[in-house]
Length: 498
Image (tube, rainbow, N blue to C red):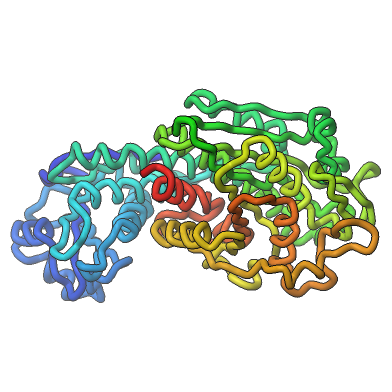
């Protein structure tokens, strides 16, 4: 995060930019009306002379406002008062960041009043504006050496005004820790594969110990002794050492943990079933599921969540070489089930087969959720608007969907019933890693993972379509999204911390 978020009272600033609100039908909020009075009606006239209506997502800038000491005023559309919620407050916080940086501003103040009919308190509105600014200010510029001065971010401090600044500060503190978890996830996903590979990503995960998490890392030999033939089969074509990282946060007494498992293919060529060259550079983010799990564990540890959680990520690189796994090979998973590898580009499910089995065998979790950029088929089905959700428990699925809706990370549930099991039956082994044809590819992948899940409530999130954004959104800048960190943090808070 590149911007410092501060909270203060509603005293109008003498310098920088002031952001005020307007509701639907151009209705000015209390502070906006006071500003308009100082400007002798110039703000209202500017609104009437524009297409600005106060709808959510709209912004209107007024430069050198008469009667004011600040350099500019931005009016942010808040929409209908009864519909104004935390997500809309976050969108305003994130939305002004780009405008302020584009204007070369270094300091700004947001002064939004809580409209009548809104269910949020002033402190909640302010905290979520700050949270949105945290998320929206993210940039990954580490490797840019020739950025023009006008392209560099300039905003240093965003002050959010509130009648209860202390309350806003208190509410924002845990949200800020979640934002840092999102930032970590985005950083891991954005790094190139020559920087983030299994050993280096494990080293990043080890840093969570600074926050009180317990982290251990298993290497190739330990995994071989455990019988993780499915995961090791994927890794055998690469010179990079595979890793299994276990992160534990103990904040909930003696309760069994909630488990999160992530696919961490730090680069995926497809192996012997090699991918086309066009777009293969995107496969640096085939470890996004693991990146989300690491980011989530950072968020939980950072905000001292009152829960026991374990995060397990299987980290491998899928490369073609003289030692690579071949189509037609049969491997034995940690569960003892044998797998015929029909396509080496369906490798993530092999990694997860051993990772989920290890997780439930060792930790006996209350619930287990895995995340993976598993299939291109989910992008065909859902685009970038939803992640795919598969679950063996209706209550778990409903809780995840509700959490995703609350934070703006939406899920769509697909079936995973036994009618799809025939598609992955092998003629020579217990199971094969892809179906007989391309139909229901995402379901086949989920059904495969389910074979390695015992009697534990389980959900699989296929995030292939939402792990990377090709355009800027208010709280999700272009690039790695960190999709899943906020969703799962909310799920934990709603279901296990009350």
